[in-house]
Length: 605
Ligand code: ADP
Ligand code: MG
Image (cartoon, rainbow, N blue to C red; front, side, top):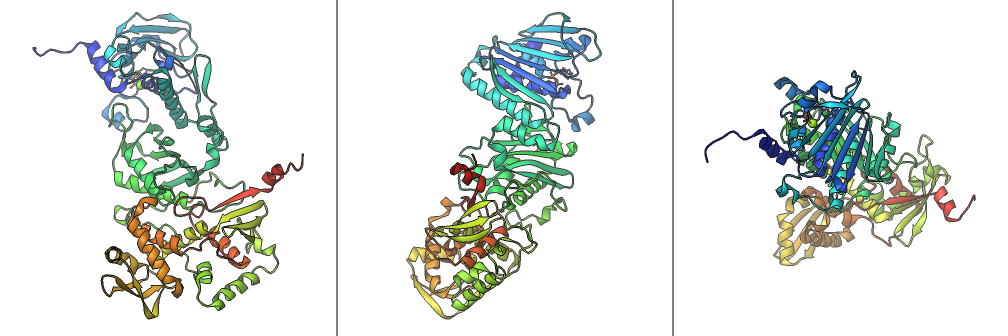
């Protein structure tokens, strides 16, 4: 075949192949055009999952009759005029490809009236062939109707799935766009069914309502609000509590400068930020907005603009990771009503992190507290005197039982004051709001783990020299595995020596371990570590080691605690980051409010 220039219609169909994959892609292009036109209300109607009809109606700026034909021409756009505009583009569209592409593979009709015009106008295209522009009655704004998608491209049609599947794609797409602009009303209908009705909201107080409209009533209850700024970047939105994680990553929404993206770098940064608080194989939910100077991000990296390129991807990754990790670290007990921290901006992060200061896994954003071991010391202490001393201290600070529920400035402790133990597993505690239930092992495990991490970060693990080395017998493969990880053990305060291929001498151990407990802790630690990380979400072995150590040294079920010890644990929990989940991502405490109890007993009706 000789070389020839392709006819325009074919060029449009080829371009359509890139951006128009299915009805949802049509809906995306049309809704983005409406948003770019400044619409405040966007109505989307579909029939047969969008295969027979996608209609988008907006109240935006409209298209002048004289420009209607041009809107359908390839590479015709009103949004950029130069390379400089492209580099700073803030509109969702700018390639001038969508309308001609769609027009080449469907029956397209546009009716519009520009704000200044007295009358509306319309134009139609069928498989790429346009009719003349004629008058039409239309309010200010634009209606674009796309019928019979791919009617002239049978090969494409084959890839379109069932109506229900396509409707699902359209619905999720409209939901995503509705999350990108809370100031715009979105309504989606399929025939007579209303699938989404999300009125615009004007202020931050109404945002949870909008989230509930789009993602369901439960969503706003199970999220923390996030707002962190650094240098030219702002991360805001909502991060799901670890307890609201899902089996699929189907509720993860990223927006960069208002554009919905599925970006690997951002998803990875979020995954890392959650790794310390989630079960292996669980996926967090979030709706997050990254706002950056448009010059720092290239949105023209992908025809459908789903991926973006950051000028400094490492910095973006680390900023997002740190900001989210910091927000999640604040999952501590709060009084009811403030369970979800307010949308108040938190203190800005002091600086855009410098690349050199970024050991990804070892970021400790908070000063570690340097008080003694407290609960762990008392619980694990060899001498009854130490336990008695702590108990006395607790009594002194809480002479009257109501004082135990108050902090030094007279505020109520969020976790209240302990009443007793239930079946050796749970602590029951009374707070002003009602009853608090704590899983004592899970909670103590997190308290210890956070403590171990900050001690590790500040290089201040306290260890004890044993008067006589403890000699333990291990299986040869266990001992070999232990010696491979020897550096971890030493960093945690152990001093170990292999006497033979089955005999291990322990000369030093962390100070908080009772001597009598050391053989059991070392033995179970060796076995847990050999079983490997299957149960932990933690990738880095240092963290896995500390988490396992915390799990093995935390108080176990059926250990009797005194009230003073229970209160000491509650106070430690309140002071510990990420304490709402244990190291495996399970919740550590819950609350039954008086209202909930009253409801149970039908009181006050
Ligand atoms: P792009 O969005 O990349 O500019 P399109 O092919 O999607 O390209 O649209 C071409 C032009 O048509 C736009 O630049 C805009 O001027 C006009 N247009 C399309 N849809 C609308 C709309 N809903 N309201 C106002 N103008 C529109
Ligand atoms: Mg467009």
